[in-house]
Length: 241
Length: 258
Image 1: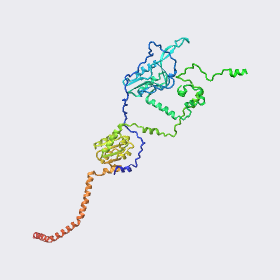
Image 2 (image 1 turned 90 degrees about the vertical axis):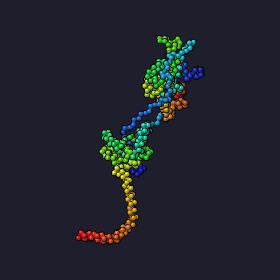
Image 3 (image 1 turned 120 degrees about the vertical axis):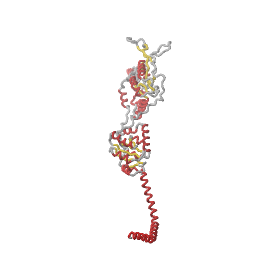
Image 4 (image 1 turned 30 degrees about the vertical axis):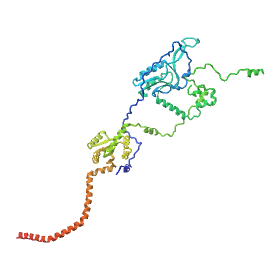
């Protein structure tokens, strides 16, 4: 009798592919992550920024208006991770002082493993002057003198990147720790998280069944909204202020 | 009249839009609450998403989990080994394994090892991987619970049955002997059968006996004729001979009598 004729033997045996029986299985040890594509950086640690920008000796440091537009709206240029690994992004606008940058530099330099990881800045050194009048000064008498310098940051800007032969779980702790100390809302992200956030946003926009979006309302002046919308609403349609 | 001109024409009207040169700076960290009119529009333009389907199957998630299993390359290696065991063994016996202590199982293992048999058990996934799309595919339906498989390079079925008789926890459900799948009953029948050389000898003897029968049948007439002729010839010779013999014997008897 050949094996082909054996079905009749097995008629009584009920075979359920979904039946699951607890039994000892093989332990799965995943192969180590391949980091061949990661190029080592020549400087693992963050560079120290100058507290005050250097001007030529014949030039008086210029004073500046507040220029809120430097921190208003979305960041359109520096919003992706160059190394496609991990980093901190600002989720709201704000200004970084030299002290914040030092805090980032020192904490990350201390917490990360410099043999495997590296960190790079994605923001400039403080360049925008902020003036202050001295204490107890009466009003008037012109603009105050420069007190400190700041780096304005828009929502979505990458502040710094961390990379190397490491997983997100390794850097998440200290990145979130320092992100919480920044003077604006910021978060630690990985490239996967950024991709997910982008996809999620697209999905939400696609699945929205409300025909009246802010963009439609503003562009078509529904209920006379042009009376009260602000100039930035024509640009960002209520998403940013 | 002059009053009207003064009121309607000469008096400057306030402009609709009021410009202030230095409007206050906005707070970027904490935007102010929207005006009532704007808040109303914001409420209307809030995104609406279709409600998730209520008829979703609660087994869907587990199904998804089943589908997204990690592929373990070590499984493939073990599966190759299992396929090799199946292909190289003359006898494979599949047992359902009830609750058994490892001490008892060890005793069985030792007894089987003395007979050069191997007691093995593998995961369902490994066995599926090993036997799918091979000639052993039909065996797969036997593996749906705890099992153990005995592999042997010789078809010592009777020995195997004698060893496993002592452990009622191992229940035979089928086996493969020399590339033939056998049910439990066929397996036990096989054990009672003689070994192959003996069976072959029996067959040869049966064949030989048939040939001898034919020869006998064909020769029977001639033989009987020869026998009869022989008998006749003997009788003819035998009359003289018998007289002489009887005479001589008679002589002898006479002599004795004498």
